[in-house]
Length: 184
Image: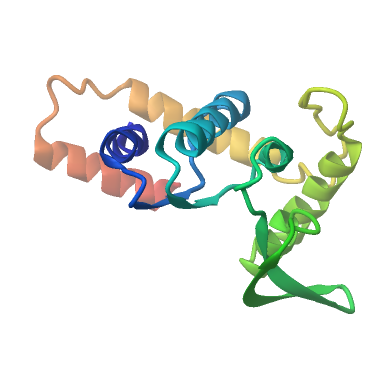
């Protein structure tokens, strides 16, 4: 909601002399909603406000708008591929990104290897011409701790179900929270 309020204010107050900076407009929504909102806002800025705008997005579909709007310039951040690594050079250049580096960033951020590997498998299964359909993996090594985690989740759920939020005091709520932290 905050992002939409901020965007609304920007749109309502911007003039042709403004500098508008929008970063990842549409995040926190469904992919389709986010893309539609981002495109509509960008088109409005280009047609109605016509001000200098920096519009950062991961929606590659918006790049096609550059053929309809000659004032729209596509920029990206330069990267360098080295061995199997991506090095971010933090230099703005003409063009569009060579690809999505989400899995690389996930790996850099320390996400567990099985998650990154499974993410790559899912990504490789996508058909760019079709909508994404979630597919589950039945492989046992990915779900090695499923039973343990499921039992813990069920125990936690049972504990929460026994708490009457309308009757618990703040002190009791804190005690319950500490007990949960200790047990889970």
